[in-house]
Image (cartoon, rainbow, N blue to C red):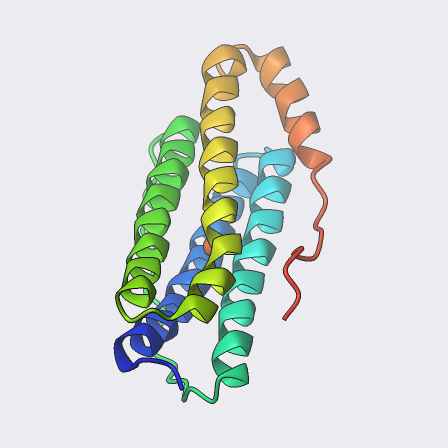
Length: 170
Ligand SMILES: [Fe+2]
């Protein structure tokens, strides 16, 4: 049986991951409106990954007979003033999520819940990759965003991102 606090944090994280998917779909909507379909594709794929994260945590809880409660998903703030602002919001969000994962890990550590810690190891690594990806996008936008031709090429590069199922199998 999962510790009560660990289970509660995992349950909340399901909601946070679905919110992440919602947020990235909002980013994709923005870029689609802006005519940057490659960026929109990149965030659509990102949203699929976030949904996977939610589903993995849900499955883990079910495997451990922990009851799951769904709550309302927050409305993302979509008042973006620039392309860069969206990218920066993305990095900020991933840093926030890293903090959430670390909190669950710490709670599991406190009660010697090694099973949950092992489960979360994948998420810890994943968050490192998410922060790197978000940072790389900002660097590229800084380099190429102000030149229309370069922005077009960057958009094409991001159009090539494809969805891959998560490497973690439960
Ligand atoms: Fe996630």
